[in-house]
Image (cartoon, rainbow, N blue to C red; front, side):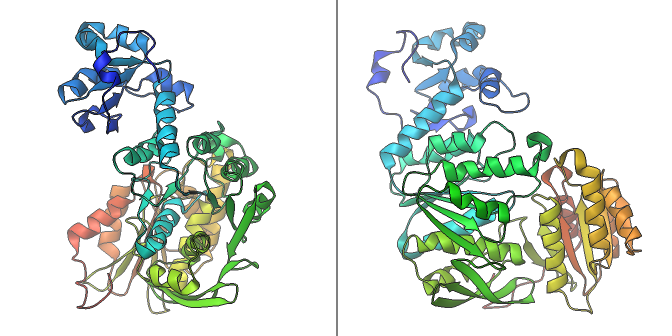
Length: 482
């Protein structure tokens, strides 16, 4: 990453930079600021319009930045303000590309194992589970902050290695939403030793065109592995299972329904927040009691277990770690209220398969005396078939055994109508999450189990916020597991 012109202060060439930022508010003294602008976002296939960070370069210097990386044309546009700092700028053709090259160099210098995880649903939960399991034996695990899983977020995560090399393994979530080989690009920044594919679902088909194209995009994580790497594949998803042909070396499968190297047997749903199963790895067996709900989270746990086998962990070692997992916020989080009702907060994202998985979880985890209430947000980015998909899922919900359905916003009205046709009389539509929140707060009563499921854009978390305002949470009993 050499300057385009010899204007850089020579003293900077011999100085050490220990931190890197793309937000001027996060710059640390002696750090380097990368000023991103719309041309870089466009060049690197990011959708939408983005703020020009060049305008914040002066603020970054005022906060102690040692240098700033910028395009020459963006600097010239802001020369009146930035000219006095010119010898502290590094000029490049593409700031995002430079940021990614730096991240790759930091990764190469570190040089330890990388686990990469993708899938249409469950990536973050599987990442958290895998990282949690691998901390066994004192391993230090680097993982994505929040949902930083794209061409900017992943490099940001790797920048942590510049200031702390003492991680033993990295567990990195890789996402995609466009047909521009996003995962292949991420694998060039940090090629995985182990690539995990959880599932292929009709998510982002609005941008990719078909579920087959989604499968091809997810398969890039297997194609991008290091030679000799291991593909960890869901045997219960036919599109994922077929990816073993792309593996450069080994494949390990996990599953519940189909034969697999790592599987779950004797599954029992005792109550919400308590799922039991036998973890089976060849002839090795161990009992797991998980705080996560639903079969989809058993699959996420099996994916983590399959990764752990590549680090020499036994079924018992893995089970001990799985038994201490807590549900991430808004991803199957169980909230028990003092008034005697239970809420499952799954407000992070939604698609037809993920929604029905949580509906089934609601049915399986409730007894016949409990009212089952589903608050379901409009599903986004489903493409041309979005109306038909909402109606199909609505029909399945109407026939599922749910007692009350509240559809939230937009195409959720189609879902509600289809559920009524299927026989669910107590189905209604709310224009937005605030209206849904008021409705749930008005009708909930002791013994109810409420599922709140929605995409981030629908803001179904407002339902949770309203319930927490109006009702108190149950206090955990002494000695109870959180």
